[in-house]
Image 1: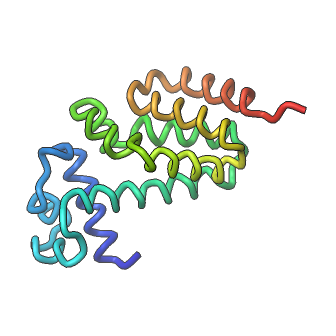
Image 2: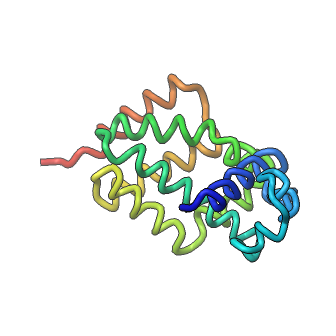
Length: 162
C-alpha cells in the first residue's frame, strides 16, 4: 500500500472513531488525513468505499497478528484488539446497524469466517464459532480477564476431536 493511501485510511480511522460512519464526510476524512478532498477522491469514490477499504486493511492486520499464534493466544489477541478498536467501539455504541452492514451482511460474513479459519488454522465450523464470539466481543467487550477466560474455553472447544 502506498503512503498516500495509508495516510488516507489512517485519517478515515480517526474521523470514523470521532464522528462515527454516518457523522463523517469525505471532507472530514480528508481533513483528518491532512489532505485536500480532491486527493481523497483520487483514491476513493465514496465514503462507503473508504469504509470498505479500511475494513479490508484492518482485517489484513488482524489476520497477520493471529496467524503465527496458537488458536488460544490468537483469540486473546483478536479479542483484545476488537474490544479496544476505536472505530468498532464508536460504531457498536452509536451505529450498530452500520456495523451489521459492514460485517454480517451476506457474503461479507462468509469472507470473514473463511479468513478467520485460515488465520487460526481451524475448520469452517470452528471459525464460525470463533467469529460469533468475536462479534459478541465487538458488541459487548466485557472485562479483559473475562475475555481471556472465554478465549481459552473457546480454543479448547475448537480443538479437533479424535
